[in-house]
Length: 269
Ligand SMILES: NC(=O)c1ccc[n+]([C@@H]2O[C@H](COP(=O)([O-])OP(=O)(O)OC[C@H]3O[C@@H](n4cnc5c(N)ncnc54)[C@H](OP(=O)(O)O)[C@@H]3O)[C@@H](O)[C@H]2O)c1
Image 1: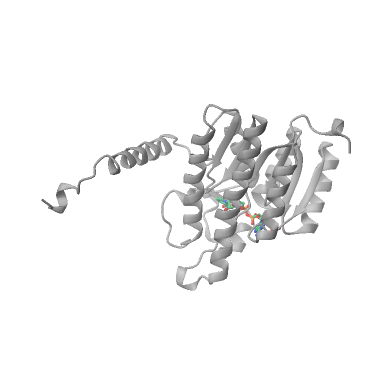
Image 2: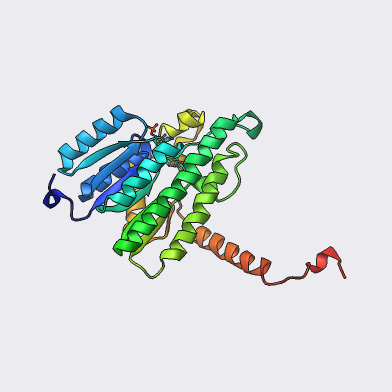
């Protein structure tokens, strides 16, 4: 297809686009006029979604079948970001959870979860950061979770992977400050998706009033992006809670590193 048919907005690459939040991102970005690269493992679903979006929004949608927890799939996706100059948005959305005590979590599942939620997100962010810095603009959207802000006992690996996403994305934001590269961190609460089945939790056990639709989650997140928010928490009614957390973390960080002497409570002379 000739360059003239490309979207002037460029191409958004969305990981985990075969279902849930990623699928809605693909829909909404196509509606905004972006061409798409849809990444996940399930070929049939990706092809169906790509065909539907091309038809409805007259954009180009390419399918990239990749297991991002494996080196080959991750390399292929990095290569796409590095080689396709039209890419202007990365949505780092692919991720999964398992609700099991650590002692009952298989080593392979644990490693795969960290590979997907942490290593792939980091490597794809790095590739996009390098690309976007070169082109002078671009947007990285990292999907973290409210579960990353404090420990939750029944997700002993997933929660910490999202704590990583939180801090890593804040560091990316410091890196791009003052440039035209944007980095947004999205922290959903509970959202209806297949992710709950994957985690082994029935959504029926959760108060429906506390669960958001995928559409509302993504629409609020994109509204947050349009408003210039660095951190968007779609379900957070009282924003001061987030500001307080940031302020407390900053103050603690400073206090920990401002003295080389043991605190007086330890009674050392
Ligand atoms: N739902 C919630 O309540 C909630 C709350 C906070 C944060 N989140 C985060 O939102 C993101 C999306 O989750 P979701 O709730 O929309 O769940 P979902 O419907 O299960 O979507 C997960 C997506 O990731 C893809 N994926 C899984 N493993 C992959 C792999 N190894 N390689 C490539 N793609 C892979 C899946 O596609 P394939 O199976 O086809 O590969 C799917 O498209 C995740 O990062 C999740 O942690 C969700």
